[in-house]
Image (cartoon, rainbow, N blue to C red; front, side, top):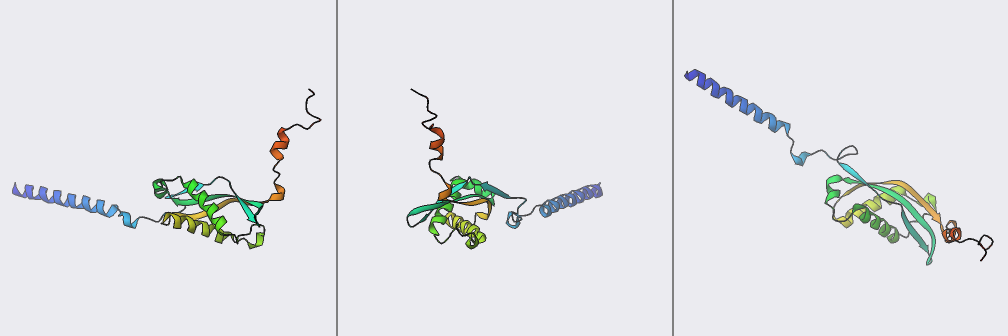
Length: 167
């Protein structure tokens, strides 16, 4: 009878030890969590069309139009108090106005990688931590002022004198 009790205790201890060991080896600590990549852990924030007027000698000479996509960790984006799109759009405006050396009229002189890195670094510096992983360009255009007609909408809605109904 004593042999049976000792065998049962031994089997219980061995089984409990095996179960504890398997749980400990199966769970990975949060410190060694995998780095987020393009397939997991990252979220993106898509900006609306950003239109920034560009000035030369105190006059508007064109408009910079862009639609950008920002990648960041989803957990950290959810912790922001401000809407991410508003913060990122504000930083694009600030970056473009603070860097007058960026000349979008000369396509050959625009360094797209420096532009993306500059925006990413400016946002991360403003937040105080490396939140933004990458800035992707979905659309980027320069529209000269001569191509923009300020009266287009008004002219379309006001009938010409020949089309106006007689009173």
